[in-house]
Image (cartoon, helix red, strand yellow):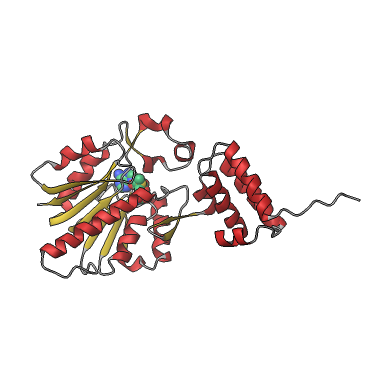
Length: 302
Ligand SMILES: C[S@@+](CC[C@H](N)C(=O)[O-])C[C@H]1O[C@@H](n2cnc3c(N)ncnc32)[C@H](O)[C@@H]1O
């Protein structure tokens, strides 16, 4: 008779997974293991910790083992679960798009604040739906910025551009998932250079452009360097090269009084701030992220 093996239970599976991922040098290994087990079981975290003695079905145990092996080899957790939360909304992510980062939420905060200030200055009411606003999100990737702005400003129309058609396909699915497809135009374009962008003049242009320097590639975590799209990461040899053209195009496409909000790389500010010194721009402001790094620069078109 074959010896009977005890079924794998939740508590043991988690304990062994923590050890496996820690030994593989995975950062936030506890969270990664929990997310992968939640994904394999189709359960949430509350369920996991409320049912530590629950036996894991064989099929889920096999799936969990293969996900752990892939995570230990460097694949990002979000590529394995296919999702990432941003602004408390769930976004589909694939290897074709940058995984939305928490610091990018500062871009949204600054954009909404700047629009609110414009409304107050114009003597209009402070809670507004963005009625009639034309917004562009340059380099939309998963669509996270464009979609959050469309949800926060239900009266606005958003143009979301990307040079990658594969990224736009993901953004398209995310727009549908969040029921804003009718107000988001997805445009394949080099920055704001597309044919369908000839007419619109924008009230707000936002962008989280690729800003890592190729010469920094060796310092990146393997999850980023080996698994996220190069076109989403690198802005040139130094990283800040894309800002000059982006700011020039934004200057030509914003209405007078229109707002530009850009995410910055950790060392981009000295190269980017002088580009906004030109007489075209006023009210330049810089916002730090929670780590104290200048993360967002904003300005108004005169
Ligand atoms: C850093 S990712 C940002 C993605 C998303 N907006 C976010 O914040 O998570 C930069 C995006 O810009 C796109 N991109 C790179 N070069 C571009 C260009 N010249 N014109 C338009 N999009 C570009 C990339 O494909 C990528 O989706």
